[in-house]
Image 1 (cartoon, rainbow over the protein chains, first blue to last red):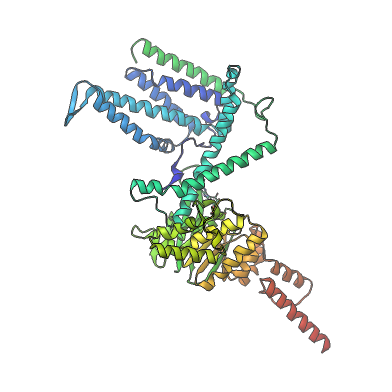
Image 2 (cartoon, rainbow over the protein chains, first blue to last red):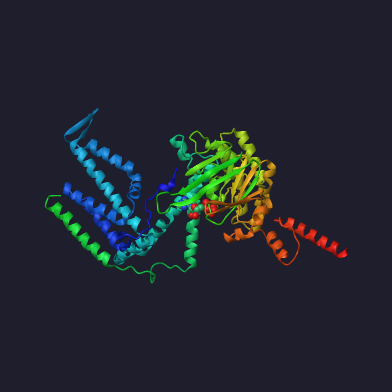
Length: 269
Length: 288
Ligand SMILES: Nc1ncnc2c1ncn2[C@@H]1O[C@H](COP(=O)(O)OP(=O)(O)O)[C@@H](O)[C@H]1O
Ligand SMILES: [Mg+2]
């Protein structure tokens, strides 16, 4: 088993145009893009959304291979979606397999579902790949701050996200080490029945939970020792600031949104 | 169980920005029955190296042979290799999981599919070897002292009765008493017929116990020799941020002040012996 392949939420250090954008710009862009992905009805609309995503990928300078790796975990999910759509959509049958038929409408729907899913995952991973966890949570906190009077705990949410993002790689590493240590004692995570394999996870899960609690404890102590008191009155060492790159990005985003909505409203895309 | 590495290189996370060449063309042969010490600065590849010796990591390039078996070969029975080459990870107590100490130590032997009475026998023997008496048997492995927990973890590997025992910094993070206990255990393994590979930060420990010392630096074999050979090359060791045992420092200092002392003493006992001899000849020379 190789846990090093887990790249979801990973940051890919770099200095591309996307890396330099303010995290708030990127958060809003991803939000807009994920709505835009579901707007098109016809081919030109999809083409526009796909092109936009591909250009963003190119601008990020993250190797395509690396981005595709992030798609691996959703492959099964995607396969199921595609199959269900292909077989269960009523319409003009193309092939018959027993009492099941793949319909023309089903194929179109499957393709649409697959494209949407891929674009959604790619655009979301672009956000985490080009934004360091700290900037990401800073951006989120700033975006949520206006909602604080409504009872949205902006600072706490951001802090939880920082901690989660910070500790995912640590826990993955820890799990990897524990698995190798148990393999050194003859554990086998690769073969055997499903039940046996699930049982085989106990020697990994127990130490992993113990480690997670130990780390949480240490972190809490360290935060208290440094006088952490929550968000009120807390200042930031690095203030977020929009730059020329952000203004250009906004302009492009507005144009893009207008185009996608325009195509949809006029019934052309 | 000789272990041979030829042209072994290993790269972590190849093709990502986190790519790291942790081992670079390592060639070694650890013969049967020897006690090897491995030293090197942090990040020099020691832990990566030892995980190749029981097939936990497969070389990106090169070959690892254990008792003539190529560990990268499809047909290699890695389980069998791992019971013969026992590996104790750094901070092994973080891998404890059993409800009782007995349960945890029995994990390895049970994975070997041994009959119940043999498992029982091995658990008993392993506990005895690490100095845990019967009263520990049904206690939880959580909530032991650092030294005790580490001995439980060590027993978990010993219970597989390996022919080669590899230990990754087994005294890290222990108090002086815990260190002493673990070291005296490790020192006793050769007499039980095991080869030992000890990764250590302490030059004194390595000088005291090892037949051969391997110095790793930036993923390469930097130096290799017996403790006296190696610790006579003090400048080279210091150049990569390592030191020499206290005994060597003492002898060097005395020599620089004009004492006539032979090189080659690396342990305190040897240093005392050398100094005593020198004093005797001095006294003898004075009379004559
Ligand atoms: N999973 C990993 N991914 C990337 N680099 C790693 C990984 N594990 C170890 N390394 C790197 O490999 C190098 C050697 O590590 P290691 O063998 O643990 O060294 P040592 O035990 O001598 O301190 C270190 O620089 C470390 O950062
Ligand atoms: Mg190490």
